[in-house]
Image: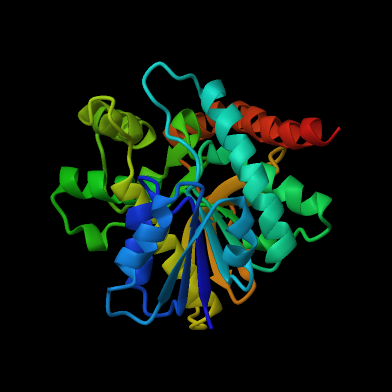
Length: 317
């Protein structure tokens, strides 16, 4: 039995993510949870698709335990996207509380599950989940992941478009974190050469690709479909490594790491295995431009991480 629980399954990311996970034949049970009652209807809708996963909907606090019990992977896209006029602090206050509540339940009801956290700001919500698991005495840093896969899919897409090459043959590692200046695309590892202006434009576009979508949706939404695709891809990699026992499965993901001195969390290439993060690769060789990006990202990441830790410690004191 391979149960995947999606917490926040009725939302803009949660619905298409659940659809993609229903198509993953490794999944035998798909538990969809949300505070919105429509989640039961979403589950009924998906249950008509002829793939192996049995789909069940769970709504509200009273059904969270049932949604989580026995889960192999817990995916958390719950929360709200940043809307026009909303500060990152506004976003943090709402989503931090949501992630803390869901992580507390996961630590209690499925402490050995893999956590794949999508809820923004990922740079802070991953430390929040980790602190909750530490407080519960069930913390395993190899099992808690921040899903940064969208940054990699954007980098691969934008480079492929510029160089007019097949996207399936393009691989650009993206390290650091998952917002703005903390997103560091390693274009020097792509196998392509770029002019200074191309490199600057690509870096800016990869770092702020989310703003492009918000603007195109005219304030009516953010990156939901591409994020759902990226989240499903990450879960597929986790399942391939942990259930299907495939070797050499690698993803860039934001995890507890000592890859960068002074930072407790960082995204680099991570090899996935039966128990989660089996090998965290070091920061790749950087060119001068990428080193500047890393230097700029470190203080921002440090602040984001501390904010998450302080949120949990402040709430429990």
